[in-house]
Image 1 (cartoon, rainbow, N blue to C red):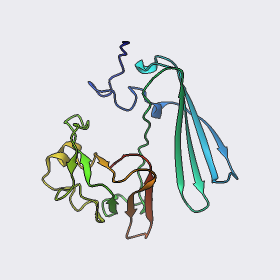
Image 2 (cartoon, rainbow, N blue to C red):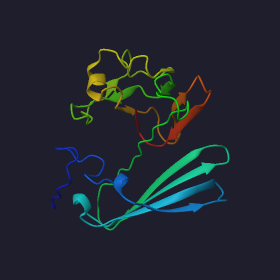
Image 3 (cartoon, one colour):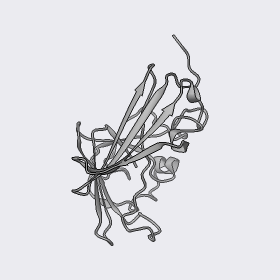
Image 4 (cartoon, rainbow, N blue to C red):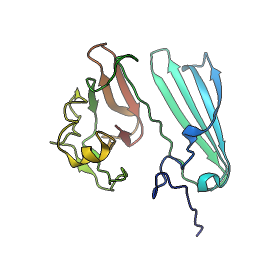
Length: 199
């Protein structure tokens, strides 16, 4: 069995791909328009065999499409010539009140999840699955993000607020969460076919 030593970021874990994750790289981009889905942009990135310790030459692609019915669709794909982990994500920060609003804590959030993943002091999921009922992590009914963020909860203290994965109910493409800003009236609904959502 081969052994691969990955970049630690932060030590002792390999988080977000290493010290120079794909978020710190220059991607090649190309805009497209008038597809059956809508207009968008496609990005590609090449990662050489051994990059930050990972095996295999990898070509990653990401597409953003803005549809005529006002949906933002993101798709990830990758091709590699050797078995290697590839688990992309994006850290999107949405402020539905607009750029001048200082906070999203008044936004009303609902998440379709009966469980969340507790974290270790390094903010790595512990492997446990915890029930959201009667905890600050219960977003099954819409509530302002700020309502329980200052609750005396050990998990909130570890994340310095919310920095946790929610194990979404159901499978396949489905509604995962809804965010609403009462001041502007803007609403965002998130659909995914993934098993978890990070808040």
